[in-house]
Length: 335
Length: 286
Image 1 (cartoon, rainbow over the protein chains, first blue to last red):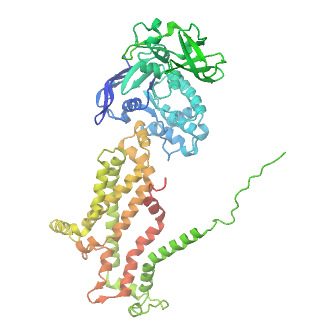
Image 2: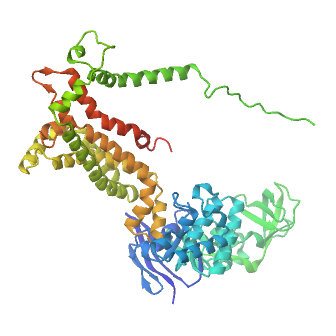
Image 3: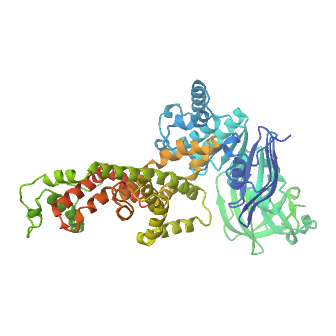
């Protein structure tokens, strides 16, 4: 049985139907990532699980217990906020021990738990400092520490890395992954960064306009997107989409075909299935992205791992792996 | 090898004076002195005899006397009036904070579409002159047997200050990120614990300055005191008013009693001016 279960969950803001009957089952110990464009409802859904937003319809079940209307304080969940939301007037130690002190845990036990968490997060030297004396990365670790000392049933992360610079973000991402492996705690993580989603998740939930578009393992989503939206959302650069009549050989009754940039290859123009004009060449060292326009209006990107002599304005042919072609019907659903 | 030296701007004194700054400084001192002058003149007059007080032109050098102060003390019971002032202002401040804090909390952290309208409506009640409500309130107090009663003053002062208190606390609470309160809820805090351990320490400055301002406003309130009280519940404001009698004004005694009336709150204000200024400039500087 699922550990955390969302059953037909609804959220309204006045007339706006923000979350539209979402169903989701999360297993114990699973790392779930919610992704989607801004405004898709991913943070709202997380806050509904947290109890910070009222659930207007449906049920939320945690560990066999209906917690749809249970106040946040009694749900036994811990949350890491985007802004960290540390208590500015408390030291790191007090921030981390706050929940345990409220729960009237034995002081010796609190001390032990805080020290253990601080050690794990490399915060031992900062225990007596207040948040404003810490760097962004350290504050983020305190926020995580505050969550882990409690050993809650579920960890909730609301875009925890978006305020960090790129290098620190990468490093903290690895730390979160390690932490999850070590603690094995059920985690729900919201992000708009698909790299975070792909690297951290056991399963990714792709949301759009308050609806779940697809749930699956990161590679499942990458290899078998259920629709056009998911195919465009997962993968960087995006999957190339072309009207079916450009590739009648592989289209098989579809309205549109999609091919990932790495499954295409730039070749000589003669005899190629497709041909286009090079618009931009991005040489990243390890890979080269060739942007080209087909028939003057359809932009595609070819990714290759060998360097190229192609220049802007060159006419070039494109070959592709026919077994890796995705087909979508006129509604955008995968065939 | 060549080295580049960067010239640092040299500052000789603490400030570099220019014309505009001198004008501003002189102007602000001028305004401050202008505002302080009546108080200064009142203090001066309180140490004159009645004859010296009405002398034209005004005397600036004279032998000071304390007779006005002793006479005020003999003629009326200063401490009983002062006690009423303390009870009414402290009482109304505490009661006001108890009502305004939850009101501001709910409006700041759980706003609805009507929140702004409610705040404007509250403020609009301050636009009506107090005298407009005098007759109904007088009749109410009379019917309830609350004329010349400290309790009535506490209620009226509280209601009078409530819009300002809610506004001040609202702007103060608005500066606290709601995520911090949400974090405490996630940590298992009840509403009371959230208030006690998170909101209260963070909003202490705002609560203190709101309380202080209400204390000062209640202390100085004269209109309701003069109209609803006499000997029993009269505050220092009514003591001052009692020295303007039909037989004429006794300038030096009136000055002495006024000095006595404002002294406690001026001393109090002096020590808490930092809090007061902070409270009144909320939102101005982030």
